[in-house]
Image (cartoon, rainbow, N blue to C red; front, top):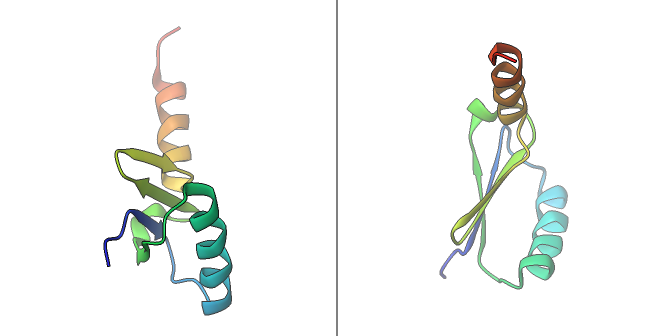
Length: 74
């Protein structure tokens, strides 16, 4: 199976959570190929990789954005 959508989470999801999320994502992105991977560096939340698009809802991304905002000169 070709996985068009990769879901990275900081911790492994429970089977029920994974199944529910998979159904929602399959409907939203019109794809059948969904794979779930664990990436502890995300700290929390998730990151979606769909074809050439990345949607990052992780705590790591939020902290990175906060750091950039706090260290930028205004």
